[in-house]
Image (cartoon, rainbow, N blue to C red; front, side):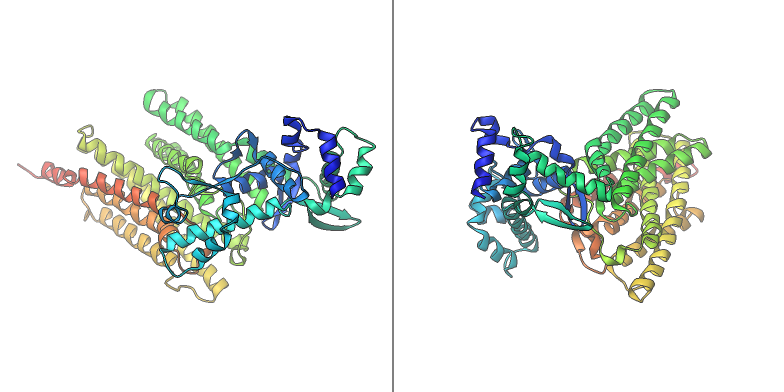
Amino acid sequence: MKALILIALVTFGFSAQGAETYFCKKDLETMPTQQGGRVKPLYVHASEAIKALTGKSSVGDLSAVEAFCLLSLNGMGLPSAVNLEAKIEHVDAMKFFNLPKDEHNIPYETLLTREDDVRNEARSSKGTESYKKAMSKLFDNIFLYKEIKAGNNWLFANIQGKELTWVPLTTYLTEEKVVAQKTLTPMDPFLPVLLKSKADYDSAFGTKYIVEYYYAKAGLASIALLVSLVALMCLVLFKNFKIALSFATLSIVIQISLITLRVIVSGRAPITNMYETVLFSGAGALLLGLLLGHFKQEKLFVYMGLAYNVCTLMMLNFANGMLTATISPLVPVLRDNFWLSTHVTTIILSYGALALSWILANTVLIKRKLGKMDRKEVAQHEEIIYTTLKWGTTMLAAGIILGGVWADYSWGRFWGWDPKETWSLIVLTLYTAILHGRYTSWIQQGRFSTVTAAAFMSVMMAWFGVNYILASGLHSYGFSEGGAVFLGCFFLVQISILIATKDYSIETKKEAEPA
């Protein structure tokens, strides 16, 4: 090992630039590595690891791959100036570390000296559940940092004949390999040795994993958000509907490409975590809006689809603490692609359809309150809301039935009053009652928009609330941390709109009464 360190120091010299990066170059981004039960490009794994540790996608001027590589070299005794800091956000955790109110970062080297304290806090019966989760996550990050720094987190494909094993950097990068390569490439014997692992793996198993590299680099979610925003602005600002329609179509093509790439990478339907359900719901709602707008010859459907699509894409791009784009292995119950592709897809599409009604219902409430919509326009808009409700409720009912069949197949019972199941039933019952009220004129004009806007809060509770707040039941594989603040803000804003427009239904009723 000492000889290997000496070769590295002599090869790269002691200049600031050489000592800073060694052989940690962009060429390593497409290296195959095994993590999380699957093979992925180093660029993806390094980005996920650095993001998990620091909350950022880079470390100063270093890219995630460079920082990950340099930190891993510590396991071989090579010095590096990479100093990672953990972000402490929980108030009680800040108090535990005696951090000032305006200071949220603490070096991992400092955390290493308090590893036992952090573990004890995470396992303690004292403190709130959120505090223990925060400390538990921090403890996991400390372990990840130690593993990377020891060189054990960077795994290389080591192929001997027909046998494939994955070994850490410290095992793969041996003195014998480097010395032998130095006679061929004396200026840099290390990089060719590392890249040989990639060449051997590609030759034996192919390069399918590279798709994820291009997927991660493309940033399709950001591009789709920009295109959808342009489409929405064109729809509002220009009379020529074809301009907005062109951008909306381009956006849905980009999102379908994004979903397709995730399917290729993961080998399953793209609806297994909160990130994917939000993505699929937004894309499905926009596609449904375009189809309904075409067949009904009504551009309001396109407006509804674009407005909701922008909301979901903003979540994908900016709610990184709540949604993660990481593609993780599935728990056993989800590994049936048939039921995953039917039950969950139908449920998520139903949420998208119901979201269309929510968008237009709130639009009606606000415009009516501002005096920019008469009773005739309200009636026309509510007829469109009614159409999307029928689509959404029908798909939700089908999804619940399919879920029951899957539950009987997987767990031996059709229904078990699991929190997710219960809230799905609540949503179905509520929307069925609204549809019945509309059909029988029990819910009068004007009030229909109000109850439709309010009803979507039940969807958000079933979709996000069960995962982020209740966090219990057999559907625990879908749970995520964070998001309670987002959900609380959503409820607050929606209730505020309902309160601000509370006299709307009364005014409509008075207008309808004979003099």
